[in-house]
Amino acid sequence: QVQLVESGGGLVQAGGSLRLSCAASGRTEGIYRMGWFRQAPGKERELVGTIKWSTRITYSSDSVGGRFTISRDNAKNVMSLQMNSLKPEDTAVYLCAADERIRALSSYDYNYWGQGTQVTVSS
Image (cartoon, rainbow, N blue to C red; front, side, top):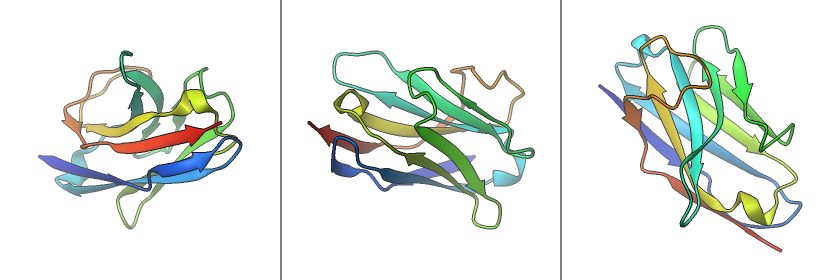
């Protein structure tokens, strides 16, 4: 089992930045990939980006372009999401996920999920 806890959400003005963190605990040695998703009210869950745990190879969705960057801290088992040039349409609950199975980095199929952190971008 892997437990995930997100932090760093909040309210920010358009054009601003936020950094989200996802701390993994439990059987982290088996993690193959982790990802960030977001879900806005009334909308389907959307993949933001992912990272392959061992190689740090990342994948980012077209919706965030080059504005968001995913990284990991090996020593702390923490995945981060640096979000720059935020837009009101980035407002959503952001969730992190982890999985030990081999899947494409663009896959939505994850075994473990955090509880989510709210990001609100005002215009």
